[in-house]
Length: 266
Image (cartoon, rainbow, N blue to C red):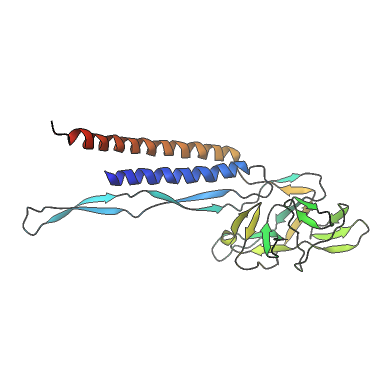
């Protein structure tokens, strides 16, 4: 009976974690460049039950069958499918359009990212091209992280009157070359770690992209969260949680009777 309690509790915990992940997806449905997380749910190893007859010669045993020991959420993996492109009219907004990229050795499609600088000088990566100009004239993310060029240096634009062509080359209103946006290439995007604020971390610095891409100024890539599907998944997770909860309550009531009624001496 206690095994049933553990299995139901594991199911409740799994659906709670899945619900938290889906809630975070829904909260970022309007965040530019956000990549929705997907849950990988696994089951614990099954147990093979055997019964032993102590009264028989040699204590013969026979198999009863397998017993599931519950489920758990192994990980949340981002879906790096490109989101829809929205025209904003804002000169500091950029959409990164992937070209034809070959599949990696793992069969996954690689991804391209903008390169930005963290406070400690390390490099982070993002698909959120909603940028701004800082008080010092640097091109930065909305969180204040400097955007890097192909040489790994910050980009000084002075004001918002600048242009960016399809290759990401930044020019001033007077026609001066201010550098080229640094676009990094990740062969295995699933190896990147989300850090919040749309930033991703890599254990090793990603190489510059050698593949074709296009930068669209005054456009931004939207979140790839499917709101309707996410709401459906949230309802499914809640129903699964409630089903496991009822199983847990049934086991609790059975234990209560076993302890307080069946075992009572009249």
